[in-house]
Image 1 (cartoon, helix red, strand yellow):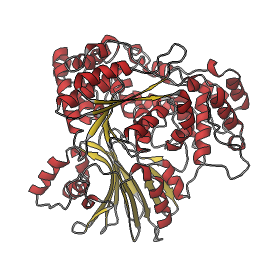
Image 2 (cartoon, rainbow, N blue to C red):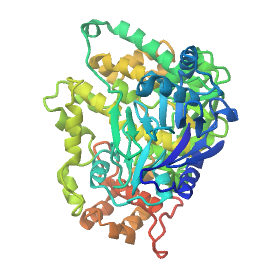
Image 3 (cartoon, rainbow, N blue to C red):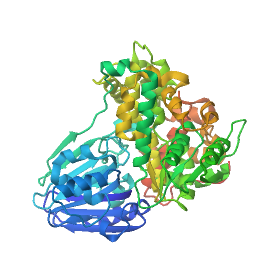
Image 4 (cartoon, rainbow, N blue to C red):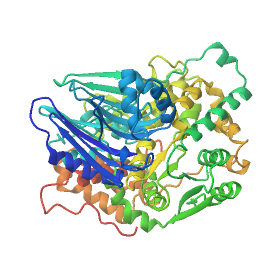
Length: 605
């Protein structure tokens, strides 16, 4: 797990080494164990290293193989690198390191673009060919590792984070109307290739981008997720599916133990993380460290699941750490979490994950985490609503989207409104071939889009702010493909994730399974109040916000008059969504005027 960056020139101009160094420096937290730059002719590549596999300097990046004439910068972890190494050695390749980076380099030489189909893991990479001047960018199937792109006159830059591209300079920072529409209607999710900024794009998951020396490009999607089933799948019993799923989970967890440092686990006390801990113990992990974060109880809402995490920790004999965070500390540190966001994210989990990651990083460099189970196995409340739906697009949008296009018309000023970009996007993705059942259509959309740019991005950004690598077994692509074949009815049993819960019963205590799902909102963010509300008010009234001219003043005033009254279908604050956007923009695109109001007041509620 690292940070990568690069500049590719098409016009004969030299690489801007200072801009490359600024990108590298901006991503220092992603790779605190080392750094490197490689600049030659029209290429410049930077890397920040977090040492997880092959702790020696032999695995330092950027990595160049003179015999092959190929170089690479790589972010991620490929869990089957040892097996691939054996295959390549049988072909005559010789290795100078023991990690996964060199395996990717030689695999590309041996198998061309198809090498990515052999990889099991999370990855974003750039491979360059000295002879042809060709560069290949790639991103893993489920977008676990980010890759941002910024065109510039006569060239292209890329990085693991959007702020790194901004640090390089020369980015068109005008707001992208399509990205803005998605942000305001999809719970702050902006699907690729868009971001909120017109000058920055994201490479889509499961995609390769080949860049020729003259600047011409060709994009290729190497993986798609199908929910089509054959007769055997339709006729297979629930018990058979449960056993297949359990074996798939065991394999996914075991793969993610591949490391040259100990692997810990985030243990929330819910089914998903508890199952991962149980399977890690079953796989023989000794001295397993587990971590749980909790908050204050507020207004009758429980602020932690310490008791359930303790049950699991005691059952499997882990070295367990409770991390309690008072609300005042959450709010005081919130500006830091906003600064760590590559893109604005409204979820309350961000600040919790940020502080959890800080504490975990003191003892562990790698953890397994339970993100993805709800999307892959049908844990959300809108899936049952879609059973037998005659209009899946309308039903999905009614349950998930924060605003319809009419509400958007009241919120956005001209020229930001435009057409219903989100409605068109959801319709296209839901009705694409490969899924005919409405529940399957929603599961596919959530797994391949909404998951990528909400919980997965959130975990990457917040953990990497402290050089902590998070691995997500539920997003093992072989497990995800297996889950897609399981009929939706088995997932919706038992109030959601039925098949997963039944598989879990053979591994973890039943009292962790048979209980309500926990969720711990930060009250000051769910019902804006105190200093948070003042900071949001100041941000939306600032000169920078006025000059941007995104929102209708009357709409903003209506939200400010009664913040708690304006919630989205997913129970998020509409005002926090606007305020967080402006706070993020002011953090990452500071106004030129020194007299601009402060971006954050901090303090207690």
